[in-house]
Amino acid sequence: MSSTIALIIIGVAVLFIIGIKLLASPKTARLGNLVAAAGMLVALLTLHQPAGEYVWSQGWTLNYTLIAIGTLIGLVIGAIGAYSVKMTAMPQMVALFNGVGGGAAALVASLEFFKRAHGLEGLTPFFAVTMLFATLIGSLSFSGSAIAYLKLEGKFERPMTFPGQNIFNGLILLVILGLCGYLTINSSASQATTAFGVMFLLALFFGIAMVMPIGGADMPVVISLLNSFTGLAVAADGFTINNLSMIVAGTLVGSSGTLLTLLMCKAMNRPVTNVLFGAFGSSGGGGKAGASDLGGKTVKPIQADEAALLLGYAQQVVIVPGYGMAVAQAQHQVRELSDELGKRGVEVRFAIHPVAGRMPGHMNVLLAEANVPYDQLCEMEAINPTMDRVDVCLVIGANDVVNPAAREDKSSPIYGMPIIEADRAKTVIVMKRSMAAGFAGIENLLFYKDNTRMLFGDAKASLQTLITQLKAS
Image (cartoon, helix red, strand yellow):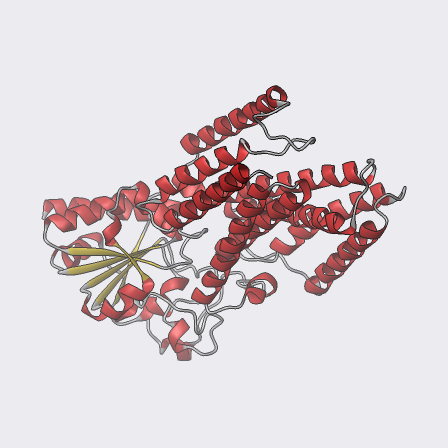
């Protein structure tokens, strides 16, 4: 490799790293995408050819044509997705695109495996391991992401389990690893094609079996984990076809996805193993707190005009958005309410829980799409110490992330999970359609607090009524 190519690849790596860094903030996320895309474009122009040349040398016409066709198809699909998919459906699109990436990595590794195994150059154990790893992880990510997409679409949000499921999945994984070991040693054998096909199908099935028991509320963690799997598969492909840009990109995606997964699990005070094997929420969402927990308390409804009066005379208001806001597609009404309160001199902030919604940063994306100022978005750690001074905390469709049981009830499955401490505000207004429990399947003790009022109804319609009442007062 020439020194020029080496420097170009280093530059590509820098662009990828800067792009990921910029994605950390809604203010710079768009620029981060463009920077990373520029890095990918440069990486495409430094692809290896079979004879060791690069795209701009011999064979340019053929490879340029294929790259142009692939890029054009990708641009068209991406543009259609960007303009047709609603912001509330963004988690589904993320899961789907991630699955496509994992499937592509698996196909590249599979084709390279057969080319080397039955070609003149042969197949060394190192390359066999990297190709089989990419095939296994990529196909697992593909099928697992497809199930995540269906769960996010509401086809089956609840965990689907059966007795001995973890043991069954473990046996499948052992068979897959056994086949990988066989193929590493006997890649040129006549039975290799059959063994590879069985391994590939089992890997696809294992991705389905791994995600099916996981509840809809854990989808942010699952999507992040599957994203890291796709990155690792791409990195393994880079070793397979001797492409350093793929190694760099895949390693960055794999490591950042893994780190994000661990951070979200920490935010929920749960280990990754509990998310993957615990079937969280399997109680079906109908769990009720015991009488001793509630102390005979009942909820206290409030009407929209009363809620508007409380909000209009407050000095500090904190809005806690949740998945219910996304389902109601009420982010624009939330922003309009915030603007109306701001005109009255009310200080409005948004409390963002790291695992609210159905993907990492789901609430940030929705609020940014509604043009909510970035400086109004506050992380959980920043908002909680000031909650005692908040006059009204408006909870819109959030449930488990504001449940005081995480702090007060040691028998609760979410005990120890960091929450937005909405119950410490002077008055709490919770907007919900009904008293249904969240995905954790337990009753929310916040609803029964003395300072909590329940505003029932569709979030979008209720917010519009609040805005109308404020404007009229």
